[in-house]
Amino acid sequence: MDKGVRRAFDRARDTYREAARVQAEVAVECARLAGGGPLGRVLEIGAGCGLLTELLAPRTAGPYVALDLSLAMLGALPVPGVLRLAADGEAPPLRPGSFDFLASASAMQWFVRPEVALPTCLDLLRPGGGFVLVLFTEGTLAEPAWAARVSGFGSFWPLRPAGAYESMLAAVPGVLLQVEEREYVLHFPSAREALRSLRRSGAGFGGGRPRPGKARYRAFLSAYEERFGGERGLPLTYRAVFFRGSVGR
Ligand SMILES: C[S@@+](CC[C@H](N)C(=O)[O-])C[C@H]1O[C@@H](n2cnc3c(N)ncnc32)[C@H](O)[C@@H]1O
Image 1: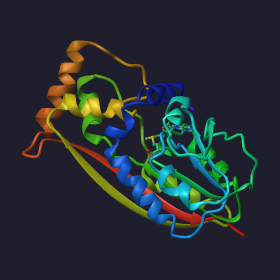
Image 2: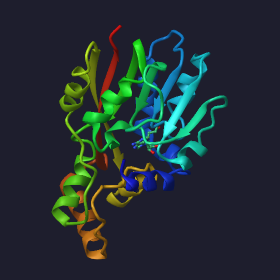
Image 3: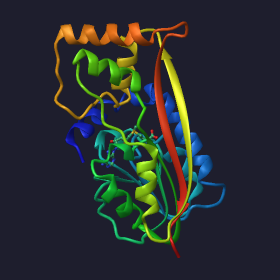
Image 4: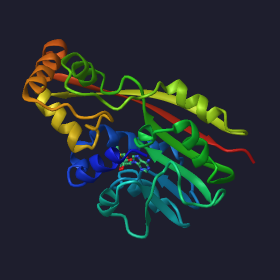
């Protein structure tokens, strides 16, 4: 867990829903992949303010635990009857084998050690339990990441290729896995607007030390606009990998 990630989402509490356009689409697709039947005891990791929770929680009669690093985000989760747990999803304080279904949308790419954390999370499922996990992958935010690099403005959170996450999950004994990748592209009128939207959705945090300064900021804006500007405006790309599966019986 990185404390900077928690701070970024704490700050985004009141702006996330309006800014998180791609994450909202991902949540809908994630709920569709979860299938139509009852889900049993559900754990959602990185529930945030509930874009996925509000789609899944009405489908379960059992307990629904919404876990998130950010207490502020959980405070904005409007779904009644859900158990909110402010904790690190990389080391969940929960008993192995105690859930029927695990869900996570747009959250686990923030894990610092996913190679350890993903198997730990699957271990919380009972034998035969199911899961749907969606993570953003390498290539997400490629345009501002490039502009940040060439301008020295800062950095964006390092994301891994879909295949790296697939290998981590496939290595869990007995796991069955279906994989699908999708790309989403938003357009903004200016680099300033794109950056503002990222901050408002909590995704502006890059992991490294911020390197403020007006000159670097202006160089970042120009680099982004000159290289990527087009008729539709400035693109901002997201790549997501969707995993649906179950753990061994
Ligand atoms: C982009 S939001 C997604 C929220 C929600 N799942 C959705 O679809 O809108 C990412 C969430 O993951 C949470 N998060 C990041 N790292 C986490 C960790 N190590 N443990 C638990 N939650 C984490 C953040 O606090 C944030 O609420």
